[in-house]
Length: 120
Image (cartoon, rainbow, N blue to C red; front, side, top):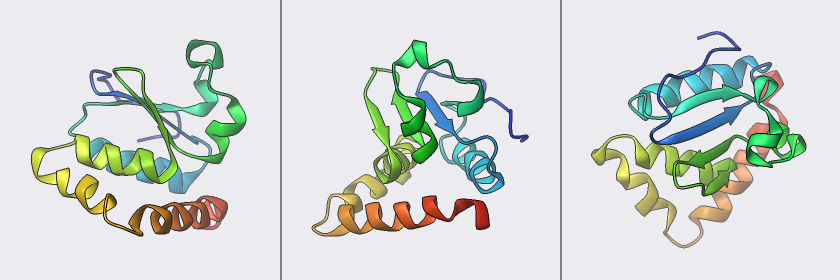
């Protein structure tokens, strides 16, 4: 997958990621496999802000998942929902995420990786 590559199916929603970040591009490829290709992957560099109303600054700060029903999730919340939306056996991620203390821990870990993603 190149930095400007797109998934082909948006029935499960759209994932907007930083297409200029090689770490982000690699992770987007993994998400494509985890979600069984049911989401469209879109680099923020080709995203039209007018279509979603999501500020570019937010998109640059965190991966964003826009579900088919219009709900928007960012950062660790987005990743957990994407993994859970893939195949039935992956629903464990959302259950684990609901355990006490896991959500804030995941959010901190996500922010740490996001701040350093260009070095990874």
